[in-house]
Image 1 (cartoon, rainbow, N blue to C red):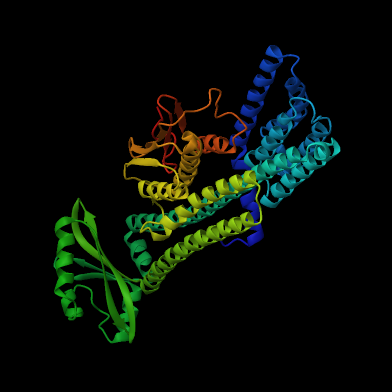
Image 2 (spheres, one colour; image 1 turned 135 degrees about the vertical axis):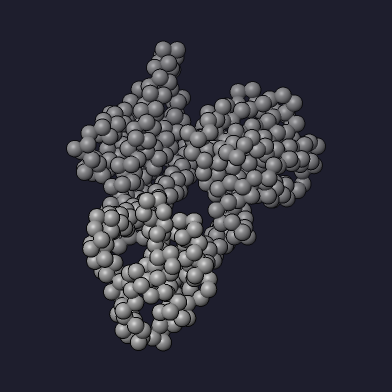
Length: 559
């Protein structure tokens, strides 16, 4: 979509990607710093001598990095060095991770706050900073290395190996999630960048064409002589007739054609049908229509000129004088090449659609391979906790694979039928927990959404449904789970997943960092710019209100 060399285009994209992301990065960093500061100050006032407060005080070491990151977003002279500045700041963050880690005592209360903070640091790297992708991946890897080295240095690996490996697994998992999010952000921005480049180029071409035509019209109005000269300079065939269909003007191109085909050259004042006896009656009717209604008529026809097949676009343009059509100009333009290009574009569009379907099919198959590899891994492992974790990951992958299955089979590659997708997802999850005596009730309003909306909703539904199956009905109790999708309007929806089970623990909170599933649900709801409400009467219900991400936030407010 661009004629620029690859390296130059990628460099321009990187600058565009980084600079255009500064406002959102600034807001995110400020919000994070403010929230952390408020929480730390509150904890320091209410629980001044708690072991956790010691860790909060240590974590202030990253505040300068965040503050500097915010400051440089306001300093335009530094923009050309943003890449190097952010690399340096995030390498300093690696040192902070190591410094805090080596001063963390695994035997003392509050040490779990360290690895949770590291997870936030890793996620912050991928979410906030828009450096080249490979740079972010390498810095994130250094952060994990710093975390690992610190836990070895403070004897966590030696004293509590399970705690060490468990925390390392979650840090790597967050790194993987951040990796995928950064990759998705970069891919979407790359597409937007290319589209903007193409639109800008096409717009400039269109403006140039409009300018040229305007200049031609102005020249025509300034002088009759200049008008004739202009017509003669145009390579198209042009002739002008009056109300009696007598030729009053033919341009040089048409005259040359007359000479080449043995037609008379002195045609001024002669009736058009005498000069062109082969002219069709429909052409005469079109000329009369222009005289009667004063509107331009555009047609096209296939014709043979000098044993060459060509497609000609024919424009019949009214010429006014004193608000009356006195003449009609006919312009014949060879559009053979444009027609060939149009047909080629149509063919390319069809091939692109086939390719996109194949891509979705292959993505689905690759995800199925990942699931198979996970199952192979389980055969040689009897650790119930690892089996549970891998099963949860498998269900999340299945929900994503189902998206590509629907896109592959859909007539519209831009939309996913959300109701059908959720119904299929419910069926898969129910089959996974086939030993449970649980009745599933669904009520799903038909609606189509983008993949950017369907994917988070599928992951949210997967987490909530699997949690309901696993925890809401202990001891294989009978029960009921309801799934409702309600369409509020074309842009807003609600998804409710409820059960009549034992209910949530008294101190349950989405903000708890103990449950990765609930943490994922919270992040995905924020990604959808939505809201989540939890009901605790007669079991548990989760209601998520969200909008189709294709609809701009400012278009329809979420009340």
